[in-house]
Length: 225
Image (cartoon, rainbow, N blue to C red; front, side):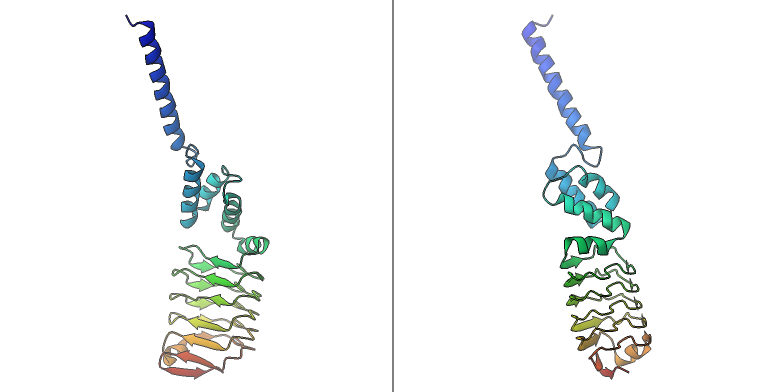
């Protein structure tokens, strides 16, 4: 028969084991709800990097007031709903890196985002749809990565701060008025040959009011008609 002291020690040990098991179980459910705030925050950022906005939102909702969790939550919700421009305008974002695995820049995704100065597109982008960056009047830098095949109607309409742009040799078509009104766009570079540039389908007035007179290709320059 156990003495009273041994019974108490056994009871205490069992209680400790129960607490440990409970903590471990919490860490395995609810998007990591049992983790520390730091751990949950790290998980949320990982979900955002993976474009897994649903799980990111679920975790970030448990982190109100922690670091920049509130801003990330808002970001994730807008990303999930496709409302890029609303989030950027509200937060006056100046530099934006589009998450990896995005292949299409949606129509009007960044339309009218006057605060934007720089946008970095990921390598996987294939299509920039109509008016995607229209009226981004302070946009100074944007990369058009290798792999982009289509630049849509008025995609960069009235981006009056753009001074140069480099287009990939993967490009198949530039739609009507794609760079219409880019009044400071003095340098256009094409990462292919003059012959390849000639094969790119170009819409009416794609470069209207653009001061650049030539497209610089790998083997020479071509006049913009």
